[in-house]
Length: 539
Image 1 (cartoon, rainbow, N blue to C red):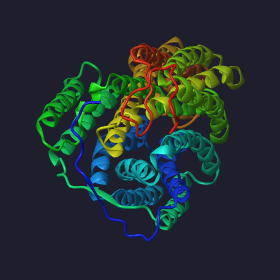
Image 2 (cartoon, rainbow, N blue to C red):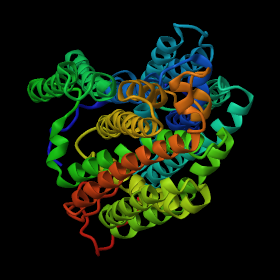
Image 3 (tube, one colour):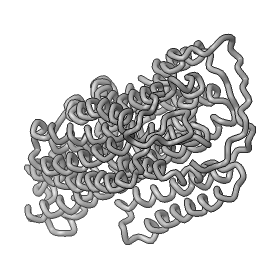
Image 4 (cartoon, one colour):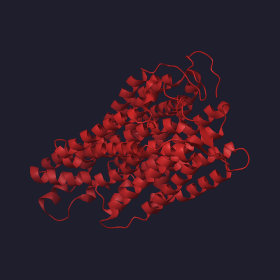
């Protein structure tokens, strides 16, 4: 991979003795587990939070998306700060920021300020995670020698990705007590991570470079503005000048960011890494896969609770089908990566995921949870096959750059894609639901103007079952909504079909990208690719 070699690192080991490798790896897994669990745990509680705090559907999507967007906007910055000020220090700071923000999310007051409060501290949660994750990965790299690093990285990515499955299950259980507990549960996990990190005798290393503050501002502004446009298209409309001003303006700022990074001596993101064709393909596959991977938890959970009348616990079990497929395929994907490289694992995963999401979409309108499990499991298996191989292959190609820097790039891509997926699919869901419910109400005798206005309210009311969301009384709107619960639940399912078809298309595009992978293997610590079919020592 092209690029100038990084400057020497200055080691400052303030702890006596060699680092405790197993303890350090365990500490890092506890830390990053919070970041993965929080990508999914809020999805299960979303209808309950929306109902109790009186949030709008778009407001609740921002609660989910604020975390993802903050992760994407600050991940590259987190990687650079880790390199400049020490991996252990930044990991501990990120953990503290994350857990304090979690506590404040759980303490959100009721009333008109609730939505702004929750979105703000979800964003600071994302900031804490953006500081923590690249530093945690760098710690794993620092404490393991080359000969054991590949296995440690595979375990790190495999287990941390699998921990995403804990979110819906834990969220369903905790929501039965109080939805606020889904945030407070991070406190004991963070305490364990901090204690283990202190006991692990992790060496501290720093790089003598300058921080690219301008680049950090540009990438955060570009990502935030573009996602704002996609997210608000549901409210502003696709013909709105504001919508396209945000989308185009955000992308223009990202283009300026690219040009600036190519000229600055110590860039936030070293775009030279993309000269490695395999790294570029890994990044593209991760981008299109993540359009579906994180958003599916939110949309499947809300679908289960609205269209299937499921409780939070039942919705969690519904998502468990997805994770069973994910967990099994993750093991196979790791073995394929070891023996044949990332390309075959990514091809299998993308193809299986595309078919799985398509067939799952086909079954949504049957309104039967049990009929959907094979296709949910197939979709999960597709993601499971590709996620760890693509991530590990990309990180292993950071030969001429730091692991923190390259992880910052891949994780920025992943979380930006997830934020875009949430925004775009949320807009699609709102528009299609409004259109379907409008037709249903018009068929029940409501005038077009009133049908459209009421349909918009119903589309926003994703916090519970449509039967209970209509106005009381004997007016024409109330009469049209009486007994329309089953029809509206089907309307919502049909709207979700469009979302899941979109996810299938995203995985199909990822498959096309995977075909361009050169098929070479590279192991951590090696400076050359290994052609598939040749023996490569496992590191």
